[in-house]
Image (cartoon, rainbow, N blue to C red):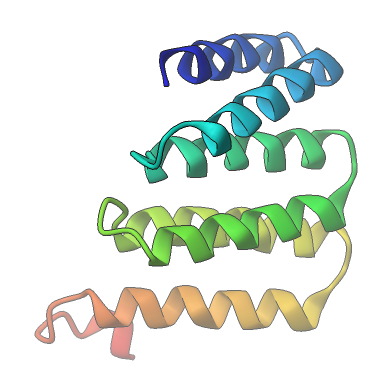
Length: 132
């Protein structure tokens, strides 16, 4: 697992310098390594790795792949107790931004409604601002 973490950190550095092809190779290798390791699967690292790949897709204008990958991240997060609703909302907001960019307004509205539902379900009932 240490090697996968090192690869993710190296990919993050390459992303900072906009070297997306090399970063993509490292993220792919890290993900493959995580899949073959014994099943002490680290869901947080897997989501982080996939999120990095989705970001690379976004920056290289592969918007459909970015959306699909972020969607897979959200699905993995919902199966994990390590991620809270804020984590899910953060990814949904990234998906909203991609939908805005590709002018997929229907999907964008759907995602914004999901964000609103998350916010409503995790706010105290006495907080009336969100209900107005």
